[in-house]
Amino acid sequence: MRTLPLSVGFMPLVDAAPLIVAHELGFAEEEGLALNLQSAPSWSTLRDRLILGQIEAAHMLSPVPVAMALGLGGLPTQLDALSVLSINGNVIGISNALADQLSNAAKTPDFLDATAAGQALAGLKAPLRVGVPFPFSMHAELLHYWLAASGLNTAQALDVRTIPPPLMADAIATGEVDAFCVGEPWGSITVENGGGALLLPGAAIWQFAPEKVLAVRRDWANAEDDLTGRLMRAVWKAGRWLGQPDKRTTAADILGWPEYLGVSTEIIERAFSGDLLINARGKSRHVPRMMEFYDGAATFPWKSQGAWIGARMAARFGLDRAASATKAAAVFRSDLYRRHLGPLGADLPAASKKLEGALSGSTTAATDSGHLILGPDRFFDGQVFDPSHPEC
Image (tube, rainbow, N blue to C red):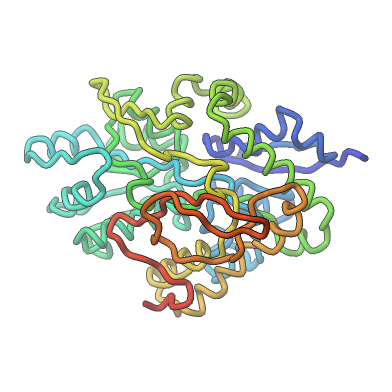
């Protein structure tokens, strides 16, 4: 098999692991690919490099391809989500001043209690300045969903600011924002530097949120079917490898190299294990399913996930919810996933959409060849999203 070069962009985050592992441990080479991994300074830069053809594929926020399909931001280019790279992985942090304010009011919530944490923030009188890595991100969608359901008038009381992930710890330490939602390791870096504390994991808001996807331009996928398949297989094999707990230390060692995250292995391992240090006093908590790369069909691009993102964006930006959900569902390419990964033995659910938020525990689901076990996917407020009725 002839080895072909492929340029792939990523942001320095733990959930870029499938691409980094695919390159460093030979899964890309097995598929005849020589990945040229390129770190980006911001999500807007990474998106634009992909749109302009400077890179062929990218580690991407799952709402970005949806935003492009809805005509929100950037040049009008159709992007596709070939597979989900990771589930969950975000944390919500607050400044030391805000942590003290909650403590003095005896409103410090349990770290896994999204209802109590949301009500505590909603009870604050001043507008809340919150940093997110990008306007079209799971961070922004989870924050708006969670705080609105907790009683906060997000249109009036939420001042959302865009800050690249590696700069988030500085932003909260210097008082630029009161709180943030960011991917690891940048929340843990905040705690490590003493600039703030962690309030809640994103998984407490939605237990199975599709955080990052493997994104390409649709015209490229149509023109380069063979390369698309090779890339999807290499990344899927890396995700399967990452799903083994005994590989975490090796993965953390690799991600810590200067060309990737440049962060200590110990801090990166917190995200893999879910054992987070949540404040500078040394308090720690375990987060179930903090970050998933493989288990529970984590990599399958459910069209219902895309529809949920589209419906939420439509509500925020004043678009038609049903039409937006339909366009968004088409971005999640379960058809390409089935075609390119089925021969490898990947779990292929019998359906490409499901009720989102309906599973409170591990559940058996039918597949093309038998069954698989899906993990819990509940929203904190018990809501269930039916992709057949996205307007509800």
